[in-house]
Length: 362
Image 1 (spheres, rainbow, N blue to C red):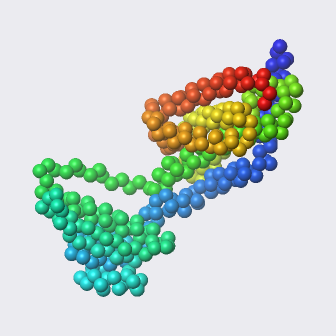
Image 2: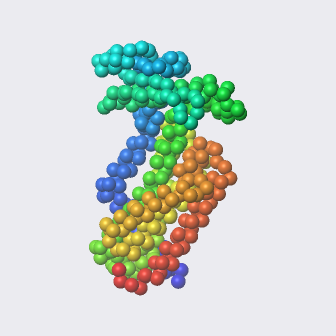
Image 3: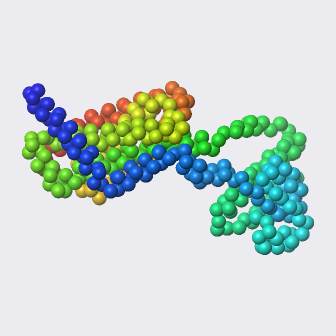
C-alpha cells in the first residue's frame, strides 16, 4: 500500500514538473511574466513615470499662466498667492482676456462672477474655466487650476464662517505625503503580487482542458494514475508558481530600494489566493472540458469574486498594502487567516468533487 502511495505521490510531482516546464512554450504566459519582471526589476525607475499617471499633480512643476476676469477676480488673485507656480493676470475686459487665450499668450482662462443664491441672502462665486485640449500639458493645467479653485473654496469658507451660528468643523492638518509612496504601496505592490495567482488559475484551466480535448487525460489514467492524482499534480504545479514569483518580485523591489515588510504573511496570503483561484480553474476545467467557455467563465468569476471582496471588512488589496508598509492591524492578520482557511476548504471541496466525477468518462 505504501509503495502504491509513493508511486502516486511521484506521479503528482512528475505531472507538476511537466506542467511547469510546459509554461515556457506558452507565449502569452511568458510575455506576462516578462512584463512583471520588467516592472519589478526597474520599479524605482518606472514608478516616477507611472506616478505621473496615478497623480498628475506630483509632476506639475512648470509655471502656468492664467488670465482671470469677472466680478470676483480679486478673490481668485488672492487665492493664487498660495500657488507660486500659477502666474495669474487679472483683466477688467473679458474680451481682451479671451483674445489673449485665443492667441495662446495664456494657458487658461478663468471667469469668476458673483451669483445670487436663492436659498439665502448671500452670494456665491461661480468660476468658468477654459482649458486648451489635446495635450499632456492640458492635464497639468487642469491639475493646477483645480488646486487654485480648492484654495479659493477654502478661503471663502473661512471668510464666511463668521456668519454661521456654530463654528465650522476644523480642517485636518495637511500631511506632506509623497505620491510615490502611496502609488508604490497601494498600486504597484498589490498589482505585482496579485497577478501571479490569477495567471496560475488561468493556466490551470488550460492544462486540464487541453488534456481532455487532446485525449491525453485517458492515457495518464492508464499509468495507473487516478483523476484525483492528475488534478492534484496540476494544482501543485500551478499553486507553487505564484508564491515563487511573489518572492522574486519582493527581492527585485528590495534591490530597487522599495522595502517590503512582513514577507512571510504576504507569501502566505498570495499562496492562499493562488490555491483558491487554481481550485476554481480546475473545477471549471473538469466540469466544462472545453478551454474557451471554461476560460471565459473563470475570468468572469474571478472578477466578480475580487470585486465582491469590497464587502469584506478589509479588501485584499488593502491587506496587501498594509502588510507591505508594515502597518498591519489585528483585522489584517485575521484576513490572512481567513484566506488561508478558505483555501484549505476550497482544496477539500475540489478533492471531494473530483472523486465524484472520476468514474465518468471525460
